[in-house]
Image (cartoon, rainbow, N blue to C red; front, side):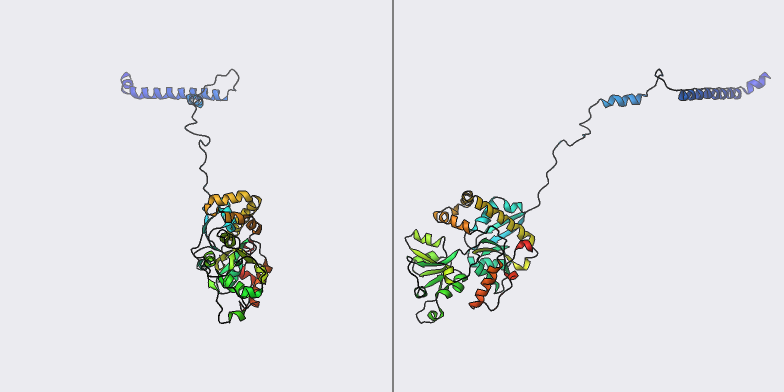
Length: 378
C-alpha cells in the first residue's frame, strides 16, 4: 500500500494544491463582497489610488504656456479690398475750376468709396472726348455745348455729373469796354479755341450776310493759346475765352479787354463744366459712377464750408495753381460750383437741344437719357 502511495504522490500533491486554491479564492471573494456592500461612514477608511493622487498633484502645475486658453497676440487685421482704378481726363490744364476733383482725392474721399482716381491733363484739349470714346480713359471733362455737338456726331458720351453750373467762357474782346453794337461786333476778326466758339458764338456775332462779303476774314483756330493770338494781333477777339483767366493774364501785360457774355447773345444758360462717361458701359458701371459722384458731392460741400482751407489744400498739393490770377478767381468759382453734382436739370438740356435745332446746328433732337443722367437712378 505504501508502495502505491509513493507511486502516485505527485498526483495527490497536485489535487491538494488545487483544493487549497479554490478555498482561498472563495474566501477572498466573500471579503470583497462584504467590503462593497458595507455602508460608508465618516470613520470609514477610503483607499485612494496612486494615479488619482498624481493627477491632483499635477493640477498645481501651471501649464498655461503649453496649452494657452486665449490668444497671446492680436489677430492679424483684415486687409481692405483693393481700390477700383479710374482714369479721368481734364478738359485742359489744371485750374481752380477742378477744385472738387482735387479735394476729393487729397482728402481721401475717393478712397472712402473704394476708388482710386488718376487725374490726367491732356496734351491737346480736343482729344479728351476722343480718348473717352475709344475707351482709353474712363471719364472726361467738357462743357455742355460740346457734349451736345459731339453726341450728335455719334460719340458714345453721357453726362454723369456737373462740376460748374454756369458758363466759364465768354467773348473776350480787345480794348476797353465801349458801347457795343451788332455792327461793331460783326466787324471784328474772331478766333476760337473749341467748337463752342466756332459753332455757337461766332454765328451769333457775325451774320451770314457779313460772312459772304469779299473781305471777310474767317475765324481762326487759336490752338488753345488765345493770349498769344491777342497779344500778337492775330485776332481782335476770342469767341470762347475763359473769362476768369484770360483778361487778367492780359492785364498783367498792360493789355485791356472787355467781355461779351453769352446771355447777351441769347445763348441758353448751360453747365460750364461736366463729367462725361462712355454711354456704352453706363449701366454696367452705374455703381462705380454713383460712388464717384458721392465723393464729388462731399468735396464740394467741404469747399463751401471751408473756402480758405480748400484754397490752401489746392496750392499745397498743386503748387502750379498758386498765382495771383487763380487766387483772384477763387471766390467767383466757388459761387458757381455744383453742390449736388449728380442732380440733373432736364429743362436745361432739352432747351439747349431745342436751341441747336432752331439755329440749324442739328437736324433732330436727342432724348435726354442719351445726353445726361443722374447716376444714382441707374
